[in-house]
Length: 84
Image (tube, rainbow, N blue to C red):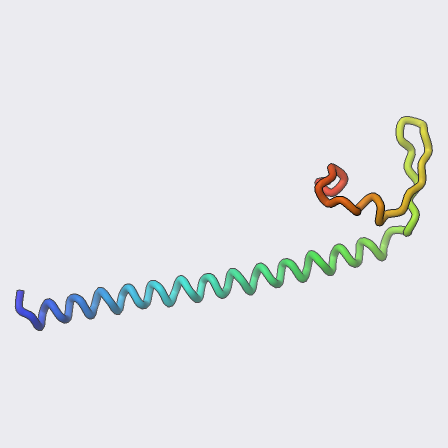
């Protein structure tokens, strides 16, 4: 293979590789923007939900009545109530 053909092949592959990297970077940027948008939407929904419910909540657990604040119920996000 002549040196000019070899050089063209290398430049072509380098160009294709660079285009692939540029596309992947653009995809990551789009993914990051989408993740930020979704996070902002979730925060807005959470805030709206907090404002929708009363500050004090009445519970009937097996016939026993309790009252507590919504903040107390939502304090530990790892609890089962958050997974519903």
